[in-house]
Amino acid sequence: MSLNLVIIPTYNEKENIENIIRAVFDQPLSPHILIIEDGSPDGTASIVKNLQKEFPTRLFMLERKGKQGLGTAYITGFKWALKHDYEFIFEMDADFSHNPVDLNRLYDACANQGADMAIGSRYVTGVNVVNWPIGRVLMSYFASKYVRFVLGVNIADTTAGFKCYKREVLETIELDKIRFKGYAFQVEMKYTAFECGFILKEVPVIFINRVLGSSKMSGGIFGEAFLGVIQLKINSWFRKFPQKKKV
Image 1 (cartoon, helix red, strand yellow):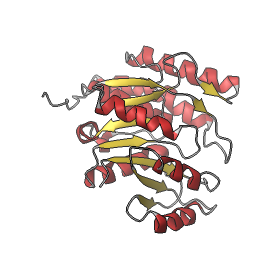
Image 2 (cartoon, one colour):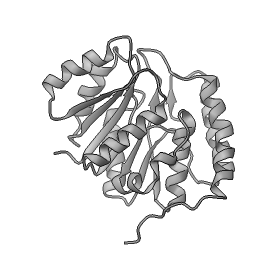
Image 3 (tube, rainbow, N blue to C red):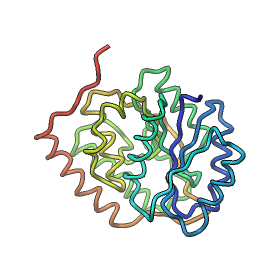
């Protein structure tokens, strides 16, 4: 059995799903993949089921009814990963904005460089974003600056969704207390891991905007992130975070 699990949430990703699955399986990590499928009307689930015949011991899927949010998709995946004894758990988009080759670098940061969570960072070495409108680049970049200021965490790309977790991080974080569903979910997971005493390391990656399919981004997601960051900080004043075990 592989120790590594890549979790990929999907909604209407028929143009990308087969290619991303094959590209992930081509990596030397030999990961397994868990698709969290939110009832895509475009037939994404059928494509995955067909591929499961080819990869019966490596490709898994959980189907949910309708769009329930990115955060709940990953929480569902994290719980499944812990139940099935994976040691390194990855978050990844289906649309090739995250390069499957970089999974190996995120793994290396956690397995060999002392990180508990590795973050595929667009901003740790400047602005490494391709094919995004300038308005979205600026919004994302300054959103991360805002989060750093409010929460006091030294992370350049606080909203990044390309990550590797050591198992202990997900075991320690109280997953049922994670509240946010959109971009704020990514911030909340990093901030909670930070408050729990885990080591977060940014690994520079180049983020390439999707070529096929449509973006799931909306103004409401950014609104949740903006207000959610303040809420996170206030809540932290009244909460005792579980701590990383001392070795």
